[in-house]
Image (cartoon, rainbow, N blue to C red; front, side, top):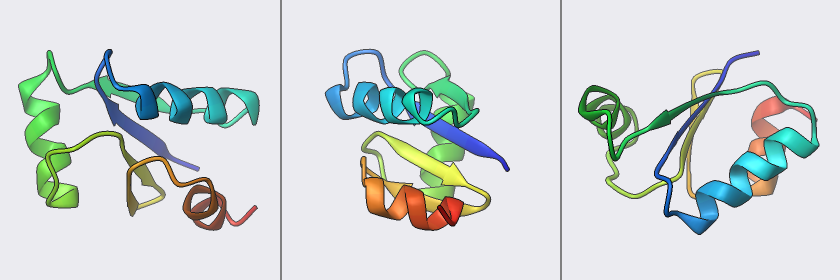
Amino acid sequence: MAVTLYSTPTCGFCRMAKSYLQNNNIPYTEYNVASNSEKAHEMVRKSGQMGVPVLDVNGKIIVGFDRGAIDQALKR
C-alpha cells in the first residue's frame, strides 16, 4: 500500500488527514508543498488542484480530507 500526503503546515484539513492516517496505523509519506516546489508541481500534475490536502492512495487521487474516499481507496 502506498499513501502519499501533500500538505502544508498551516492547513487544518491536512492535520486532520495526518491524524486520521496515524490513528488508523496507515503508513504514509508526507510532502510539505509550501517548502518543496518540486512536490508542489507533482501534486498539481496529479490532481489538477492547488489546494491541500491531496492524497495519493495507491494511485487514486483524493482532494481534501474525505474519510470515505480514503477508506474506499484503501478498501477498508
